[in-house]
Image (cartoon, rainbow, N blue to C red; front, side, top):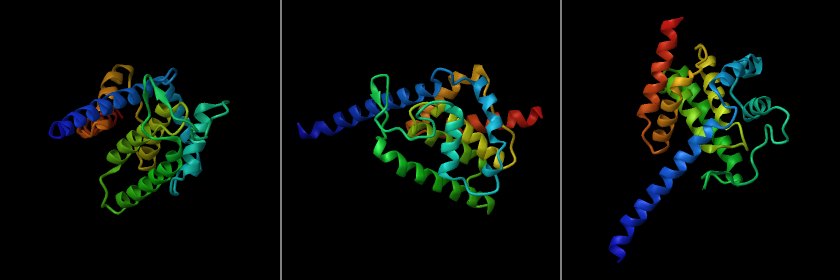
Length: 203
């Protein structure tokens, strides 16, 4: 029996991970989190505090506060487990502050490497920062909008214009986020590169 339990447990774990990935990324389309809303939120990036210096945890919390508006949880990390459908977000509330600090350190390290010509490139950084923030789900709500705004912040800091996906790209966007959550990041990298190139050609 012990010889067959490991494959079974592995399959069960994969099923849970797949379900969690789908649940988490479905939350990227929380009510009100439309692409139209993303375009409106771009103006929040017109802030000198967001340019020229390292990104801080306070910067991200301030952006969330502006997105969430007049809510008691705006800019505050969630204090409880969050369920999306029947599934819990993998990161518990006690882990959120530390993982957010780690994420900010990682973003700044990658930006520095890019400035030295040693990094993976700004498109890669913006893409994976968006994905990491979506998976972490640090706030009670508005995480999808925040993750896409941080993506645009990083692009903006590198001299790129904003990327606001059209409605017809929603299904593709959802699919590639799910794939990235499973460990396959090639689709999300290709998706973002194509949209950046498409926008550049239109300018």
